[in-house]
Image: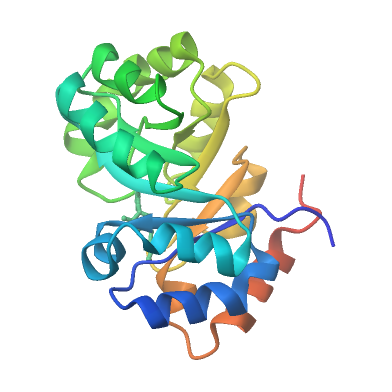
Length: 213
Ligand code: XMP
């Protein structure tokens, strides 16, 4: 089996449910992304538990968007809890992002996947790509719902900066299409954890993108 390019967005509240879904899908994942629903529902300690159960990297999608000091205070606790990557907003400016990057691997949002992203974020995507290139972040978040934008963002990014794309499945993005457009990893939430058989759904998506270049 080749290395997976699938990231599970584990947006449930309950600890037991999260651990159960993580364990049964782990074989098909590269990493698990947690967001505020799971942190609020189960506490930051869920990060350690997920790592123990799956052995996978954990991405904390806390979308940090504050002044440098507050970003630093939050990021410190999240990295201390065992997160391997943090997702931060770039629109708050270089100093706020640098505060997170000083503490650990950071993924910068350059464009979001929902329709509203066209209002305020898409017009500044260019500058956010520049920021990611200058800071050489681990990766950027780009919208799986707009493969043409993924292709564009990839073309403007320095090689080596990963393109990570939420929006596959429930939001309409197609896994294979977005990988062909240049995504390194796809993020899938509801289509896996909300399905009748999360393991089977993860396997199907894994196989859909396995071998796609
Ligand atoms: P679904 O259920 O739609 O979950 O597959 C997607 C997950 O990814 C998050 N998400 C985003 N995060 N920029 C981000 O940083 C985005 O454009 C974006 N779109 C979706 C969402 O919160 C959920 O955890």
